[in-house]
Picture (cartoon, rainbow, N blue to C red):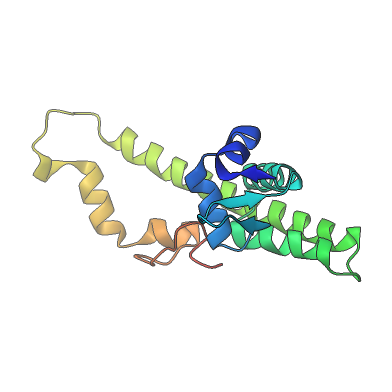
Amino acid sequence: MFTIGRLATESGVNRDALRYYEREGLLAPAAKTGAGYRLYEANAVRRVRFIQHAQRCGFTLAEIHELLDLRQTGNACCADVRERAVDKRRRLRDRIRAMQAMATALDELIAACTDGHRPVDDCPILAALEHAGGQADIESGDEPNAPRRKGTENGTA
């Protein structure tokens, strides 16, 4: 059995992240000592590394939870996992396209500002943003001023 400190060391993830994974239902201690210390089985290292790698591939914690749940169900197959990976790749490509459009829009704004010594009231970038009226948000597929939840994609879980 590992303490949270040893699990942190073995997995390369800090204790706060492990506690967060626990709160999110991704990781559970096998037991707690009388003093309240969390104890984890050795396979928790593999699970934490799985979570970290999945995050690096762009999966949200909710999506990682789904992937982990697929392992627990007796009727899931590799095609179920593949479907989620293909969908993630599609959404990632959509986000890349949206970000490329944003970069192009910024390039155009930067090119319009050739005289950096103008007063801010005459700044062509600010004028263009004011007259665009949310056009950049529409092109990126985002709602203007849409609230975002931390750890989610486009504000949805």
